[in-house]
Length: 104
Image 1 (cartoon, helix red, strand yellow):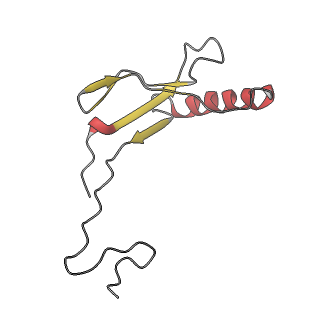
Image 2 (cartoon, helix red, strand yellow):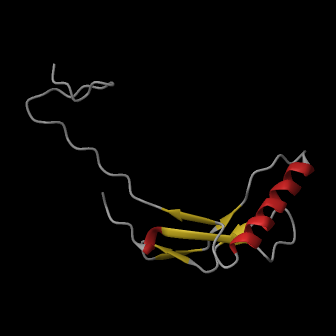
Image 3 (tube, rainbow, N blue to C red):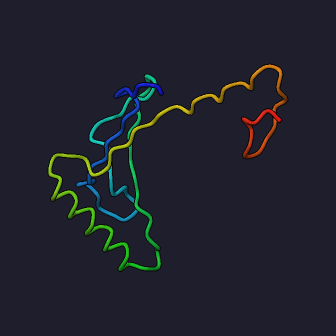
């Protein structure tokens, strides 16, 4: 399994500058670098647009988590590459299905 570097880790905090519902509720504190390229990280928590009570509950939950965690991010994410599937052994036909490794 490949080692995880900080190059593929993201962190999200409460967006303290949020002024309207269309803005992200969570943001990265600084640009995140992935494979040498900088990205701003933003996240929205989906709540039905026709149910303002659910949206308000989500905002209160984020506020509570932010208060509990202080300087720690609310969400941490690690990206890892999909490992290539090993080529089939020589001498056996490639099959598909749940018994791929059985040679008969």
